[in-house]
Image (tube, rainbow, N blue to C red; front, side, top):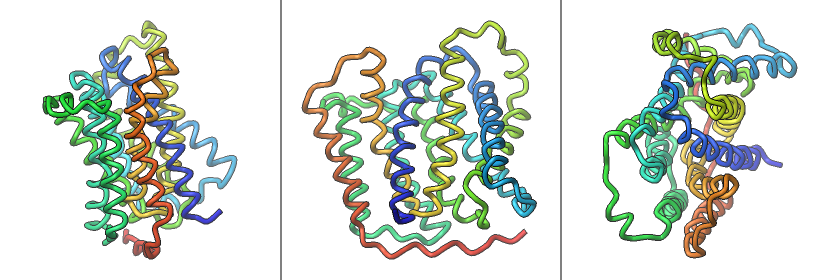
Length: 304
């Protein structure tokens, strides 16, 4: 399997795991402070990834050079998660998912600014088809629902979180100095955990951890293990093998995965016409998989 194929497979798994965090996140967003749950998930994920790194690649001393890199990356991803939970307090899941589909386009823009990655006409077509398919699924093929879409405070908050997410992807390639994905992920998580602890200490201290509802703990461990630890590794693994726009294009699959998650949690299957949108997202990914773009040159090493 080529490195590019490995990157695509990693992002396919990533999109399924992230979809689960939307379904579970909506159930717990108003039961615990976003800063508290995000700090806890980063702590749990840091321990897991640290153990995994120690058992596999180890933690080379060279990885500790220029620790500011981890502060930048940890701050970006921590910002995304905190703003996501703040946004979900008021934004309906459909609206939040619609905002999330803007991430690939923003990531393509960030990739050009930071790495001079060029979005070819073929990639632009794939991104457009994927966006249409994602919106089709989100609004369940209901044109009136799309026209009635309104931008509220929660959507605006979440939009800025998606901006942070979009910048994070090309920044991984720019700041990585050859460290294995698991090692780079560990540094990012630790930095994010420290930043969140400092920023959200009052919320962490006042949270009644012993009496949280069971669903909060279920959601916390899911987002910590799968939607944070595993997804961090997958994104960083893919970002070192694919252009940023291709990495984030997999977010278009999220609405379709969410449908499967909701059905698994007891919701009804959507109407058949909704799956037309899911098919469009698959077509978009096929266009990317068959893309004959030139390999993206590696980023120049950053200086201390």
